[in-house]
Length: 386
Image (cartoon, helix red, strand yellow):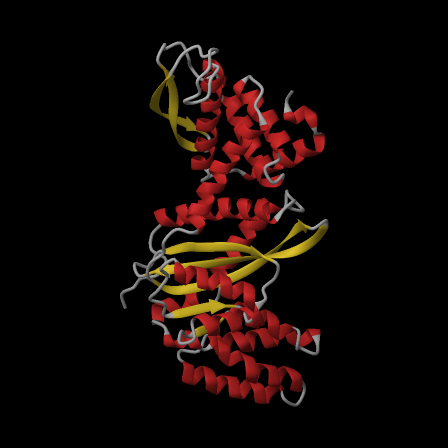
């Protein structure tokens, strides 16, 4: 039975997911296809690999490589062969309908937390035969293993580190909680940007950020010259503990936003924003500090709380003046992360509430792999020459 008919609400969710696209996840799709074809060959032979049974109708005979061009990119497939030569996977004869079924199965894996019953229905439609829960689990396990390899891959030298977090609703112990998705980005010594890792945690408490940063170091992360992030207390404490000697740049964009909550009148907001912008656009640190003094004195009589806040917080956005001149405009904020967050939000909003931490981490990991692979093909983000 088609899963589209099985649950109209689920159909709406998956269709929305399909409209968002799964570009860049061709490798994961290819893995699912390959696993589905293996299942079909086992059924054709009436025996699992190396199984001794009187019901066996033939023997496996390796694989034949094939590149399948689809709307989600070229897929590298391994077509299972049998010694008798009378087998060909039905998937390759079903064309676009099967491609669509694969997209839906991926969407359901992400959104439903790899629901065996749901994915089994899709693979059954794709293969044309009933699929057991253990076979579905085997296909899902391949995806999780691939994503885990990416999350734990070895790192190298990175000049800059950008840290950020966003929140997703996740069901935990029968309760829905806002879980923190911690993400690290880096710019390597060639000037290319990369997504370094991701972790879904209960919060942004120091213990969670510290564990995440320690994991980067354990994977070979080194050579750091500067860190950019917002000023979340847990994150600041973790950075100080793991990278005590690395200059920390507080995101100037977040500073602008934070300042607005200290402005006493709505009519002053535009003026305050412009003054802070002029401070950050100063040619060097000396000039920025001079202008900050002028601005704090300007607002002291009519907005003392704002003046004190600016005096204590704005200087945390000045470490950027220690970086190369041609790097400053891109390193002074965490806008790189903000753009990725918007893309993650566009994709995750169809899930609304994730059924588990693993399902949330699975979807975000897939999207970050897509972004990371895209960045690898683009021109350098920062020129490392003066």
